Length: 463
Image (cartoon, rainbow, N blue to C red; front, side, top):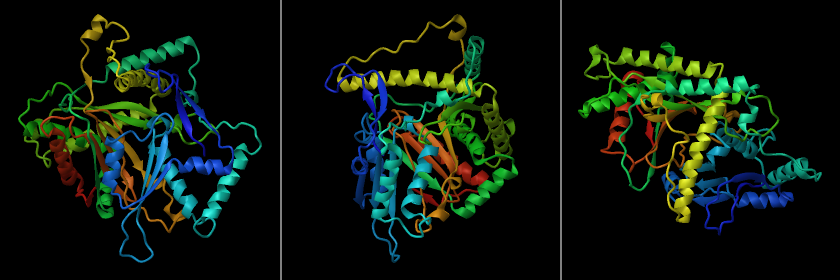
């Protein structure tokens, strides 16, 4: 109800870049103060296209910052031809370190349930919403005693590892598992071009989606498992079609996220936090001798075999007994990387010399000759969102499409896949100026061709 903030350790006017962030929550002093603060994080507008809003958010001036970790944009679109109907676009913008896809979709469902839910028998009026805010404020802060509202770090809610030996064993396991992550294929990138992110959303209609899901189920895999195989085979095909020499001795590696919530210790805190771990899936880069032409029909059995391989790798990662330890070590590693990027960003903002990137320790003789560990792309699966959205609770609202994006760094590329309103969706985000020779476009075209040929999925809409 009140804004959270990440307070810099040095004042804004200082020439020294901020180095430490501390999160604090300023509780509203009254229900009216809560509404006033929430209003400052809201924008109402009319007839602004979704593409324009996405472009502003991804490529324009930063909307979020130290003192604004979230923002809501509510757009009324042009009137529809149907009487008593209106179309709106809802954009919820949040800092990724404070939330993930699960929390965001849960919040949106709660938003619709609150303003249009059937619990009261009718849509909520402005007066009823104000009363809801008053009751919420009274329950949390009306007594004058402080209430802790910020959830604890995910690392604190993972099963604890006690004892120096177990902690050391966990670090060794993490290092050993990391050395097995081999990937020798990357999309060729450009240097120095201005970053420009674009988002392409592909939606398949309900009938086609049922066919896709049925085909995957018949092979004992999910759409997410199939996407790993499809991404890798499309990359191999794209390289062959362009006459590029392919490193078939090195596998194709893709990284993905895992939802850590099922592994967390119970807590009464807010659901609003990020709980992501990461692991890699590696698939062969070569084609079988019977399918060297790269024709999708000839690759059908190879495709399903590699989809099952992706399923097995994903299951091993999710069920590994050292999952909690690996998640902690990965969080520590990603924290160090984020800090290095933050120093670079601050140096640019404050006009300071760019600090050199130095390794934390000198590589050993064995490390100097380790194989490459480069990922082709990040592939994220948001699963079946129909399990989160309870549309029956707000029948006056009809959900029909969804997309998303994040302000990733130059040369970034992410692919999201899942189901929304009973339709399979693919969302591709990448830096259009960050890659060479239209390679992403060629790979994406190949991937969609394979999706249609192998899964029977011809897009019904492209946004």
